[in-house]
Length: 494
Image 1 (cartoon, helix red, strand yellow):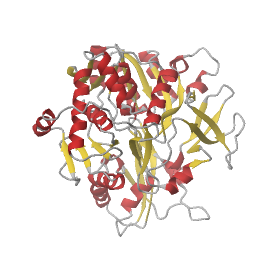
Image 2 (cartoon, helix red, strand yellow):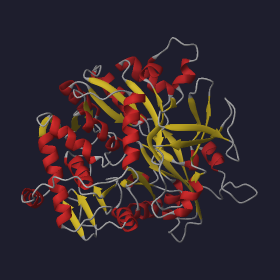
Image 3 (cartoon, helix red, strand yellow):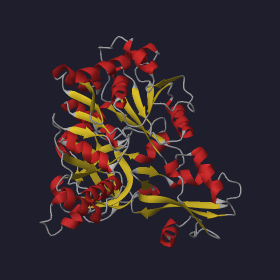
Image 4 (spheres, one colour):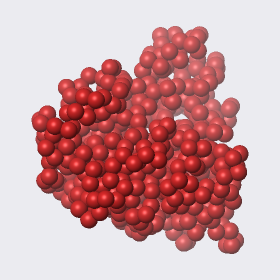
């Protein structure tokens, strides 16, 4: 089933329900939301977009993000949401790999080269949309058809496209209602995190329920704005990285604001330290839930309930709070040994998952697919252990990923950019704890190179948030007997 059917059904049943907001301003009810999406679909068909084609969205959060997403689906195409923070060079790589001829932007199209670049921030787009005859028939798509091509940075230096199907999105949405909490029509979902990632994925169940969708007028995350919007709308649900939770708590304490109107904050995307979530619950009350997932199993591996996050009555509550919860309903979870065998309770091994929310593979990358999917199991690369009650605790993050402000930075990608400088002999990138962003990027370098030159290399080639915030000079990098850099030793130096 095409996920756009959920929007059409909600529009038929509740056309007058408020749907899209920019700040406190109502932009469209569900009738208007669906009508605009159908006009986007008509526009795409006029430009030659066919079912199964890929169409990119490269924009910061705004109400039209959802209009375009659903318009792409109504047309039968697949969406390629791209992180708005990425450098144009990185965006062009994704467009080429995904074979995208059409991209939606919002005022930043000068450095992008695509056959059709549609700027939604112009009067021309509004005029063009007004001339379209809404496409009433939703294109038929099966559960196995591509809906969302999610690019996640890879340790090889190039991102991989995760195939997210319509069936995976449906499974994720139904698990949310089963394992996280039911979505209600009176709810409002607030997009403070990027809609190109988890926050946007969570739109589908809120569309099905006929809930409200609120984009902050700032386009980003500002604690005072979030608190003000929550008080205005009430019954607000939002997805947030752990660093956002900490910033929101700090901002609320400073303003003596207890978060009136906040119903639920689902946190994920990085390590949440117990001290931070305890502080958040103490201030806001039992408003928090946690999920664990990957792009390869979007938002859908485990969930830690509101009760488990806030309960302090059990003797083991701190250990349970440090976990990421219990397996969601649509997947199986195993802790695997070296050969993929199931390990006993309490032992640490690789987290393995299979089920309806797991991807069928990577886009046009059979080698990576074969490494990651084995005998039907997704090898997450994350290490963890299960207790007797089925609670999963992450023991180590795989692939040395650095999570800064909720965004992933893969060291190999940064290292390859830095090594383009001819005078840099060696480099190794690691994460260092940061009080606001969770982690920051630090580069250990060998060679007589000015830091300003390395900064410029990064600014020319990758997104600003990936640029090292500090450089540490060494005579040589610590290595083992096989010549592999010992990142553990580098972290110890920090």
